[in-house]
Image (cartoon, rainbow, N blue to C red; front, side, top):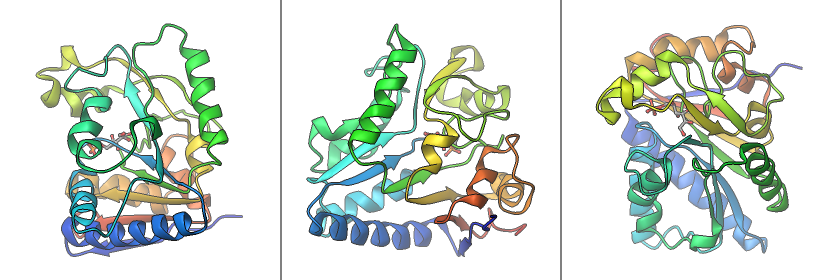
Amino acid sequence: MTQSSPARVFADRAEACRILAAELAELVASINASGRPAVLGLATGRTPLPFYAELIRLHRAGQLSFANVVTFNLDEYLGLSADHPESYHAFMRRELFGHVDIPAENIHIPDGTVTDIPAHCAAYEKTIRDAGGIDFQLLGIGRTGHIGFNEPGSPRDSRTRRVELDPITRQDAAPAFGGLENVPTHAISMGCGTILEARKIALLAWGEAKAAIVNEALSGPVTDQVSASFLQQHPDATFYVDADAGARL
Ligand code: F6R
């Protein structure tokens, strides 16, 4: 059965983030009201920055609490410790966790410094399962069509594992690292299978550089060459895009 992921095209990213943040605040409140923590899957990169700013604004306005929220990040660069400024641990502290009331023990991000990577990945999967699975997964999309760091060729049923970054992905990260030679070559990433088990998924994309891959992911064939195309088969996955990223839809 194939279901098409609906796309919601907004005038700009600020409006998209305002709407999605309000929807997420409502989801968290309703899950918390049912007597359990809300489990969120979170992304890093440039795309979620205005979304996290909006979550912080809602938190400060008393409209969103993270006191009963558990989070799992999609990925982390291999070889970067939590205090490296480009690590996703540092990113999350800087852009979201340092500004909201989330208990430290509720935060989960793969550790890029572990020696036994398979054991760490298996434990990450088990922690997600033990938390009851992910209620809401936030995604960006890479120019290779990756979600998480599931580069072309990542199987639909892949799980959290060590992955090699595509040259295009490393190029896109080069400015932040002050040059391609400083960009890690590998990462730990949730798999496509891990992501697709989330009950609700929102993929964000802004700007014309994402227009071609957004169109491919939504309207092209479902293929492991574009891991975001697997979202077409998810029962509740929505693309939130601005006018530029949605220009080819
Ligand atoms: C980030 C992640 C990646 C990014 C994607 C887009 O945790 O898993 O899939 O979402 O590379 O990156 P930006 O947002 O920087 O264009």
